[in-house]
Image (tube, rainbow, N blue to C red; front, side):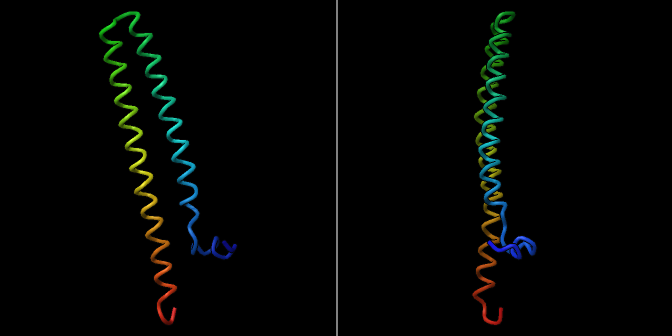
Length: 96
């Protein structure tokens, strides 16, 4: 990538960044899940039923969060790839 491409937004760098953010998001979601499980175990000491419910909701929330985060990142990558494909098409047009 040339520096001019960077200045004129001809080449997008977001595709590389979103892959890093995807893994960072997974780590954050899993940390929140670990915190939820730890909190539910602590709650089980006072109320077993409420602690079990909190554990189930926490695990379902982590699973839903991971799937949702993956979908959001994929949608963003689709938009980035559409821009790159359109740039390739533009470059192949006569007179471009």
